[in-house]
Length: 369
Image 1 (cartoon, helix red, strand yellow):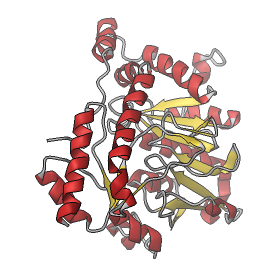
Image 2 (cartoon, one colour):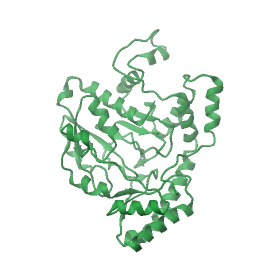
Image 3 (tube, helix red, strand yellow):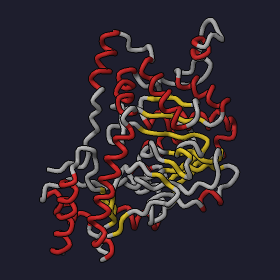
Image 4 (cartoon, helix red, strand yellow):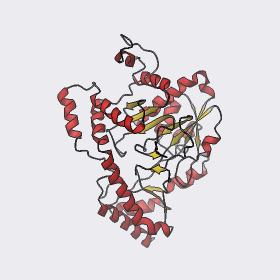
């Protein structure tokens, strides 16, 4: 069986985990700080917080936005694509925002940049970058944007790292991502003053960071917050992945290009379409998907031929929760194209022969159908 996904195994993971155990210090932040140093080099900012998940990064961003709006929260709305994971919507609903789902483009399964142009003063836009697609950013540091860049570690748009264009950027280091920490995430905050508040929220609502910085003798409870931090074991795993990111990226690029080359004829014959990567993007090659009619028949055929495939997101606006909370609406493009998405096996343990075999099975399917 060719698996849909397997996490990358870094050779130093066990070594670094053993170091944590041998030191018997699980809260000294040695590996967390080492990760932040590498991440700061890529994102060109030190306003970074490592979290226990991408979900946590989104939740901190929602709390930050709520604080900035103060008593305007009841009249403020957050626009979110329905084609995303539940964490995106949950974060803002939990913080008391009115959430409204919006439609996507069929070409790349993400929001069109026109959504930003028509925002009202009392609205913010959450951008979800899917697979190798990235929002067509028009400017940097747009305070109306929150970036759900869960899948986008390592991606740049016009040479600027994705996650640094909006007010906040949220990245995931879940085991299904290109690099992982077991479970983990990253919050990027563009405003220095908001970053100070973010650290307070991240520290369970205390000003403990000021004590660690020598600015106070003792900490106190100063705001709402929670235990959003990444742990040292997860940080050790993440560090072992970050230090070989170039190697991981190279392997994934080769897999992507092998798919692209071997499926080119089927695309030209219009059996299905594939994603077109914006020329302004340096992608991280997170996924390779096709858009196909009769997805179930295709996926059944693939699994019967020892190839695991996977769907994309399930639309949030048509979920049972959305319907019971008056969040459902008609989104024509989302409803038409999301049921056509099939993601092909994509991980660093795939060989070239594996990818060629997957492509051969796909070709055989269309010979029979």
